[in-house]
Image 1 (cartoon, rainbow, N blue to C red):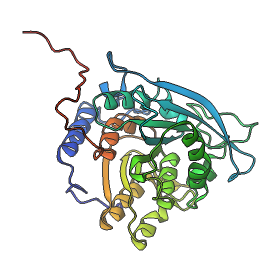
Image 2 (cartoon, one colour):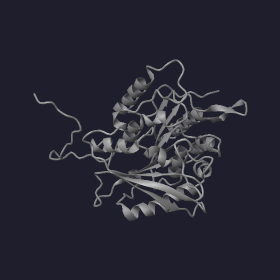
Image 3 (cartoon, rainbow, N blue to C red):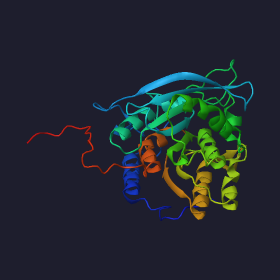
Length: 336
């Protein structure tokens, strides 16, 4: 039996919720009766594309991070430094698992464009963005657009395990390197982590184990399923004291729906398990948001709303009220 979420929103969304609703209507209204096999009907909006007059930063890397947590492996990562970064001012941090997919300028998320556009309009704080790939042995290939590493890297063990090992990679191995080169805030409220599929549950696990380091989680089609016990998270959440983390979940009703060895298994139903996560976190009073679409398993359906997910996660960043503060405009105002 598929559990159904109550009709009312999980948390007060004000204009953000209405915007999400309008976006979902926009992306679903003209669809054919049956969705296409690769979600081609999801098209990126202006916030995900390069815009004239919007400053673009610099992608640094790739860098190699040897791992002591997973001996014999290494992590490749890139750092995006926005044009607004000031080494004299501590900035926020956003980490994306499966970094190659979120970084690609021809991909389904194009996160650097999203950061540029939102930061230019001061809708998010100045942030360093890190795109990190799953660990691999030196003789194994880097993940690609076709193969994210489940068959060729350490991704299944790192991303789907519920223990704290991947959190240790991020907190104990990656963060010290970043802080040597960049002025990154030490406040967990200024740090977020996200991902897609197994990368999403990995992001949640990092914040779950280390809420003292990360308070914001972005989850697209998260694999909260019985790959390595991820379906247990709703019960774990209900049985644990609330933690100071904020999560935005996204999934589609045409995600993998529990067909395993010829029969239905709800622990392998991606959409159901994402709904269960929202239910559990709502019951415990977490700051949680969600967007359900008709998308399949992949980054396309989540990629189109990445700007809204980022706005919501970072909605309480400091805002200047100085009347002399310069206001940038990224559009042309015609003269009268």
